[in-house]
Amino acid sequence: MKLPVRHSLQITLTACLLLLGACGKKENKVNSNLSSTSPISVNNPIFNGSSGSTIVTQYNSIRNSVACLTGNRLATDVSFFVSGNFTGTTIPGNAQWQPGMMSSGTVTDMYVGVSYNRDLMFLTKVTNGGSQVLGYNVTLSFCEMQYLISNDRALTNFRAPYGITINTATSCGYGLIAAAMNTLMTSQQTSIVQAYTFPTTFTAPNCGR
Image (cartoon, rainbow, N blue to C red; front, side, top):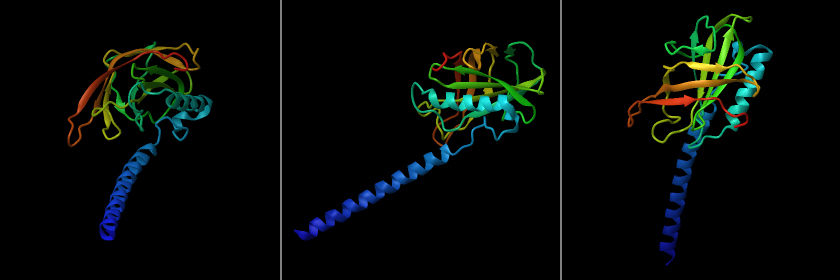
């Protein structure tokens, strides 16, 4: 009877070690995603100054406090920019958004929008340090959508075909996205899933939501 018991114990220990190894690999993958650098950071020169520092603090607070309705928030946010001497409160739908952030100027204001699933849009105004608007950055923080939006699929090609309208009221401590209807993003294909372009509408959040 001793041999079967010993043999069974060895099998059990081997199975446990294999499970621990699998768990270890999964955890390392998650940790590597979480180490990504945020696009809105005091390390970014355009956020120099008191306004930029305040915006970075607000961004981190909002991002960390707004929970997704379904799924988890993606580890990495994505940013796009449009340059030009914009006037008024609407960025037109024909604006050509480019990946990344503007490399010169000073961020002076932030406008925040939220979707039904609690995806977040952070629009930051870039000026010459005075009244002239040089352009805008948009930073998007999405929630997971099973098989379609995940940490393993890059998000590209931001478009806002109906424009982005802002509300400059600062009762929340920051400006608001009055309307960004059916903005578009593409979730890149993987070896098993095709590319997926999806619409997201952002509107003004309730403070503290």
